Length: 463
Image 1 (cartoon, one colour):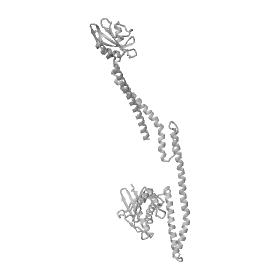
Image 2 (cartoon, one colour):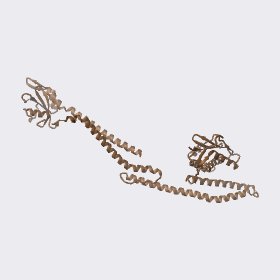
Image 3 (cartoon, helix red, strand yellow):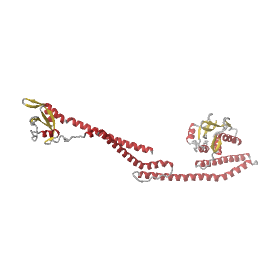
């Protein structure tokens, strides 16, 4: 909403600035045009210069040729009125016939501020007389009563300031009204758009100028809600299917494991047959573990696995996981090393002990599965800054940079790029990531210090 308000203010500001610039530009253009026109039309100056150019000689009054040419170019005429007789003693040849040659004092007073027979006239003081220059009737308009009150002139600056202040107030008032109405119209739209990513139903009243946009937002919200419901149904069906299949397989799989165990223990059978039964039982155990992993991954993905957060000592959990694997009788080619500093006796976080043991166990199993020729597995707990870390590392065959990048970007990929015979990092690492994420932690993958594969689980320290 702040971005929309900023956009509207910028738009209105640009509009107001544009209006002011246009007004100023018009004033400048008007001033330039007026100056160009007035510079070529100086009637009062022309009258004064005509009076100065008029010379008295023995033969009468004579006007200089330059001044006569100027009057002719402007289609103007001129007369000289004597002070003593108030008669016209000289005039130009183009003097209109209707212009009188005898004047009274009132006539002179009128022509100096107005017209003679409709001709705009301008007077210039000459020696012992008055020179009057007249122009065509359609050339000038004269204001007959140029009178200004002194108080008005004295208060003109204050008047200008008041007018400017009123104009600024009106502009601001118009801006506020327009802005408030626009915001009132835009606000529901922006609120609706911002609410769409939340996944909640959105409804915007379809009225006003933006009713079409409001309708589109409502349609988008309906589509998203339908997609959300369909996705939830699919996820529920998927979770139920996984749970059902897991449940249905357990019983026949338990029977297979039981019968295979009986055959394996039957000493009356040939060794080769007992070996086959052993393989069947071991592979059945792997299938059982895989089903359990798949079911757990599904529950964690859909938040169906209850997590009981209690204070848990990561050091104790990791140590117990190592002991459990040793007690299971691991092959000698998979020795486990406990490389935790003895001074670090407790790394307490809030979490689910069994899930954390499951994550550590999966990583140890993962190291065994991907190193068929054997490797040394190192388990380490340490404190690093604001985090507790559990590091499981091996010195086995490791992973390529390409696979390491794939693990970092999609750590639960299920398909191998080079055929089904190649070991794959699948559900085991997926479950590890889900368990650590449920504990507000992070998982990182890297090359081991001895060339193998290393996984680090980091958990935030309780504040």
